Image (tube, rainbow, N blue to C red; front, side, top):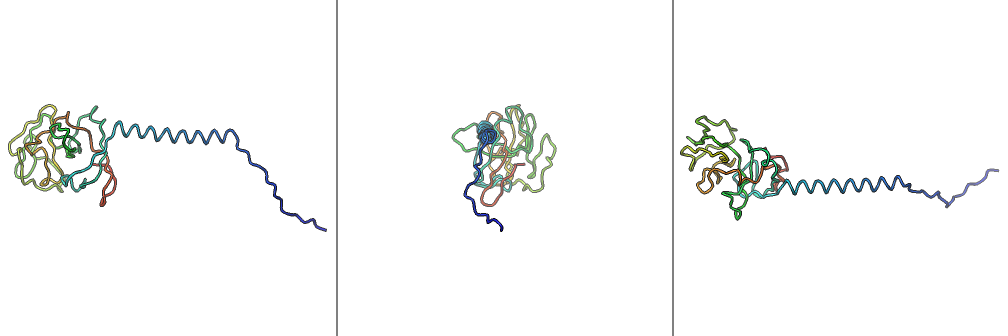
Length: 194
């Protein structure tokens, strides 16, 4: 006769080894250290500012938040085409302006017939930029100093920038950093600023 096997309620207890516990705590510690390191880097090197206005459309929209790399310009100088954050004339009571670098130190800038000329030569730019209706102070030739930059908004006819007498050329010591990454708004996605 076959023997009937019944249910057994005894299970073998599983033991957690010291190696498993060590591995768990090691993983938790590494994750915590990575988060802490990333936070320190972002807060020491980066800064978050909000876009105010439509002067940088379509690259940056009103209300978007932008991460600024404050470290880059401590080592390198701004380059033509980069979007920078600065306080106009160093005014700490103002909001940060975000504009694109067009003219570099030592260059002459002039706007003739709606187009930018650098050292007497037409600046080759993306055709998406509108023809400039008001050259402002750049109707006359502007010679940039050793630490001055000429900046324009991408939405050229709706931008307060270096053409405005109250802003003019931007000195390097008023530049906070390079616009690095935008966090997007309601209609846009996150992305690197080019």
